[in-house]
Structure formats: structure tokens, C-alpha cells
Length: 384
Ligand SMILES: Cc1cc2nc3c(=O)[nH]c(=O)nc-3n(C[C@H](O)[C@H](O)[C@H](O)COP(=O)(O)OP(=O)(O)OC[C@H]3O[C@@H](n4cnc5c(N)ncnc54)[C@H](O)[C@@H]3O)c2cc1C
Image 1 (cartoon, protein in one colour):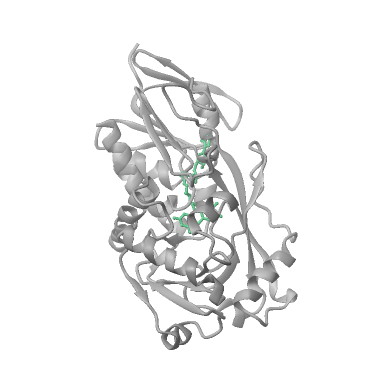
Image 2: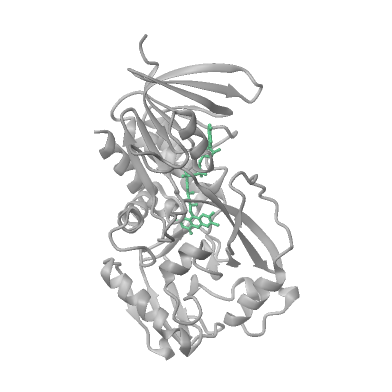
């Protein structure tokens, strides 16, 4: 039996789209997506920051692919007129007790070769963000904010131009390996079943990655041959500001380091995120969030905003904006991080590996948007 396509890529988030576009130079590609269009799950529910790379373990995939990806993403957006604002970002020690944490971020940025880092004199920092309370700040000029939806559409268009066939409304429900690759079982939105034979299977299914890996024969907790594919779900909620003045309270993202002398990487590993910060979207509107809540592994991805974290957001917001009132906040978007959870508590890295005709992309949480084009090149290299 011959194969239908050389490559089947499952998941049309920004990562699957970027991978499919890249692989089209090497053979016929089918991109399969259960939703009605591209970038509907994590790729649509995030902060949209093009990260510069100072928050990741030195030498990790997150570090290396973030730095390479940020460069590629800036070039991509310039070439394809995808809206991107070069805002830079501030990282702040809110209290003098947090200065150790700020120094650690600086040291990590140096070790990671992050471009555009600047120590700021207090007067300069205050002039940049006069409404924000902090003891000391450093700037990173290399961070930007991207229009995630426009970026997703540009990837889809580039993938189609490169010859990628896209099957929306199709869920991959099975993956039977054989000597020539895989036979995939598909189900469309109306419940009709079909099969697709591929020589190589790339699992870029985000929250669906563990299930697909299991269907392809890989155990959830790994074995002697392959790593664990189990992922945990960590919800991130945002609150928006109710008044136009507060919606413009900052002109760039502002990240407080964790209170006290906590290490950002360890804090991220245990809490699941960087901690509540102020972000700015492509329209220049400020948001507070995302927070972090661990959910059961099979939690549904419910993107409706609930007003159930107002007090926690108010307390975190007041650290930065002392006059903030409860009425100033309105619930915003919700996103879900697909997270690996190493048993030893170390900060989880992206888990990208190949086993024969299968490529796994696991734990593609932040900075996955930033790194997407670099992840695609990494996968291309794994397959070459
Ligand atoms: C709260 C939050 C904030 C974030 N902020 C940032 C940020 O500021 N900067 C940054 O760089 N990154 C950020 N990220 C991370 C970034 O959004 C993700 O890393 C990135 O979007 C992952 O893209 P993806 O293509 O891997 O996953 P997804 O976008 O989730 O795509 C996976 C796709 O696979 C499909 N799928 C799943 N199973 C199947 C199946 N069996 N058959 C067919 N299709 C299937 C899904 O429908 C989905 O469309 C953030 C994430 C969160 C949650």
C-alpha cells in the first residue's frame, strides 16, 4: 500500500501551521485540524508578547528557540505586514526586598544572550511608566506585541501557497503505525470516518498531543525508549480595565519579579506561570494577567470569562497601581497552558523528539507563539 501524503501534521495552531509550511518544501503535506479554522485554541488565547528569552533555563529549547524565533517572527511580520508593535518591556522589583529577583533576571538575560537589555536609572524608568509603583526596573527593548490572529492567518496563507492541504473540521482519532508510516483514522464534524496514510506523522495537537501520542502507541508516562507525553492543564485568566484611562495605564508590558528573593524559573515551575503582570495588546490596551490555576488533566477548554478571581487580581494589581478599585476591573480572556510536569520539580522545557516516523511536540506553552517559526525549523532538521 502506498502513502497518501509524505507528512501529516495534526493541529493548525501557530506551531502546526509553521511546521506544515516548512515541510511543504520536502513533500506533500496534509494539515489536519478539528476546529473550523486555524489558531482557535491556545494560539488565540494568549498574551501575544514576542518574548526576548530572559525567563528560561540557559541552553533549554525554550531559551534557544525563543531567541531564534523572536528574530524570525520580527522578520516574518515585517515581510508580510503582520501588525507587530515594538513596545519593549519593563521588568520591575516592586519592593526593595525584590531586588535580588531582579538581579537574577538580569544575570539570566546575560547568560542567555538576550538582546536589548538595559539597566534603567529610576528617573528614566518612572518617565517610561509614570503610573506604576516600583523600586527598580530594567528594560528589554527586544520584546514586542504581535497580532496573534493576523499572524495565524499569515501562516495559513503561506502554508497554502507552499502547497499544504488543510482539512478543517477533522479530528484524528487513531494512528496505526506500520512499516511505511501511519494510517490515521479521521472523523469529520458530521461524524463521517475516513483514513489517511502518511509516511511521517507530526503531532502538533497542543492540548490534544498526549491523546494522539497514546493513539500512536506512546505511553503517557514514557518508557525506556521515549519520554513521557503526559501534560497538565494550567488555566490563565485575565482582567481588563473598565475605564479608558486605565486601559492606557502602561505603554509596554510590565513584569514584576516574584515577591521576595524567589527565582523566576522555580516560581514558574511551581506556580505554572510568570505571575500576574500588566500586558499590552496590539491595540495598545492594557490587561492584567494571566493568573495560574492547575486543573485536572482532562479539564474541558472553556473559554468563557467568569468573574471569580476579582479579589486576587485586585490585590496583585494594587501592588503595581496602588489606587486600583474593584470596579476598575472586568473579566477578560481565558487561556489554557499545556504543561509538562517533571517529577523533580525542574522547570519544564518543550519536549520535541522523533521516533522513527513520528515527531512529538509536547508542552508547547509560552514562549510557543514567539518560538513557532524556530520550532518549525527544529522539526525540519529532526526530519532531515
Ligand atoms: C495564558 C497564555 C498566555 C500565553 N502568552 C504567550 C505570550 O505572550 N507569548 C508567547 O510566545 N507564547 C504565549 N503563550 C503560549 C502560546 O500561546 C502557545 O505556546 C502556542 O499558541 C501553542 O501553539 P500550538 O500550535 O502548539 O497549540 P494550539 O494553538 O493549541 O494548536 C493545537 C491545535 O491542535 C488541534 N487538535 C488537537 N487535537 C487534535 C486532533 N486529535 N485532531 C485534529 N486537531 C487537533 C486543536 O484544535 C488546536 O487548534 C501563552 C499561552 C497561554 C495559555
